[in-house]
Length: 105
Image (cartoon, rainbow, N blue to C red; front, top):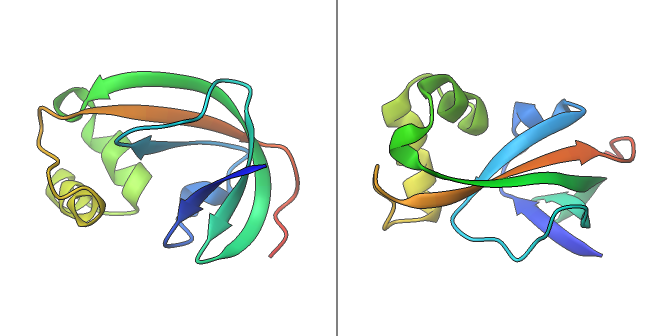
C-alpha cells in the first residue's frame, strides 16, 4: 500500500474525513494509502476525491485548517517550506481522504 507522508501530526488527521494540499500526486480516487507521520503509520485512508485548484482560489479558512496556522500568510509560508516555488498562482491538487481504520498511535 502506498503512503501519504506528513511531517507533523496536523489536527485535521484526527478527523474522519480530511483534505491535504499537494503540489502533485500519483494517487487516484479510491486508492487506499497509509497515513504516515514522522515515519509512523497512524491509520489507513481512502482517497475519495482529487481536485485541482490555484492557491489564490483557496479560502483563508481552508489554508489555515490545512496547515494548522492562524493566517493565510502563515499557511503559505509553511507550504513554501515543502514547495519553495509555490506562489498564489501555483496549481495544486487537493486530496480528500476518508479514514478507513482507527488511528493506531
